[in-house]
Image (cartoon, rainbow, N blue to C red; front, top):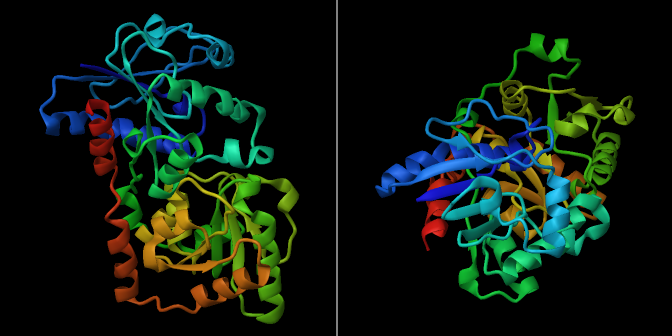
Length: 363
């Protein structure tokens, strides 16, 4: 059995989807072994530059010819050509890991739809993402099976596209083991990076869905009312945005390696993710794995990921968000409280994600 995945999200710096693809690929060979299958896992990338992936898991090979992703999408928006077999050779399953599932001659199509932002919040996404409005329905019309990261997104996809329940499978993401062992940074590291000792942290981008302006407003209000409020540290792409420099009580990290990001989160009073929409919200799960309190917007997907361990606030209410921040920084943070958060996060593993994804290939 030949299984081929789109690994284009692994090119360049890893976004959340890139991390999903990375961990799924790392765990799939072991999942194949647990099922006792005679199967080979392969990857392909769509790029005119012809970049080769490095450090692929043992037994995973890159296949396919060099070709522009933009050109392929234009073809697939209008035609059923080229089928994936013309690009990578014979395959039994093709998994489009990032919304795009190409036409096939015989291979089973599986496509991950991470969220419906392109359809429901079109004004917040790039022109490239808007193409999903055409590409996704074409794949569904061919019979592609859909994988989503949460039950909330699965229900939304079924409703939006009028799909039967069995066509959409929720496969939760996992959290790396390293998050459970993360420790707070040394004061010297914080000083060398211009960061305070006492802080709450946001990890995310400037995507309008992340609701960063509302968070900045809420934090400023809380500082005005409570002078001892921890500072706000912005990490991820937002932590590299020069236009956010100079705000009172707000600090930017610049680019951080994974180990440093884990330390930063582990040393925080709380992580906050006030998004108006999410497909999963991995930073929330990672923070819980590090034993930290989390503040989230009051939306179903973040309740699904955080369970009973989050302080929630309406995403359009700055006062409510400020109060949630206050409550999180005052929450119990002894060893039992941390262990309780970590116990929830341990239910989410990348091995389980790979096992359930493999089941969709075989269904």
